[in-house]
Image 1 (tube, rainbow, N blue to C red):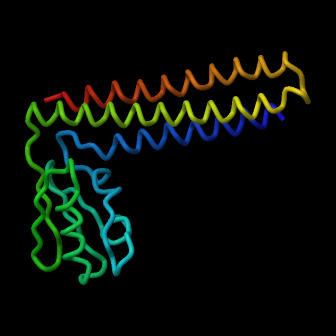
Image 2 (cartoon, one colour):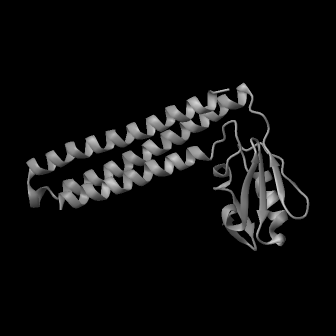
Image 3 (cartoon, rainbow, N blue to C red):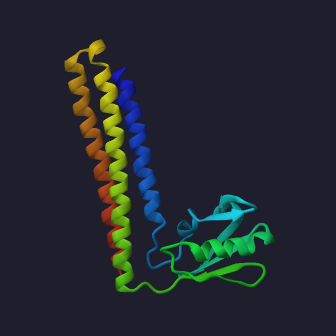
Length: 184
């Protein structure tokens, strides 16, 4: 029973760390990258649909993305969704077949702004880990009458180590992203 609780917590913590790293990839550095556009939702016939399901993304130049919609009718909706996306700072242009997005050069001020956003996303990830830990601890406390105090105490220590290792994973990813963002 204790092993099940710890295994469940481990799985949920791993997903939280992966989700945080995925959020980091949506913050741009000096290059255009398809990851920046992964979380953009386009209003496609009344349904919010991820851009990656509606169009092909190509990166012909360092700061340029070429977006080729599978359905030409969605061209205007895709263009509007990109224009409305905060933190991208891009102004898309369309020629009737493809959308060309040229990302502006990153200024020092903009880079520092991105670092703040990344730190906020990292803190959100850590809060998620703490919530998972709290829920697992409650589940362990409920098992005290069945397995005994010593076993639960040992499992709680293991849970703390698990949480610390995942928090360290988020911190490491945060440091790498900050260095990447501040690199000129």
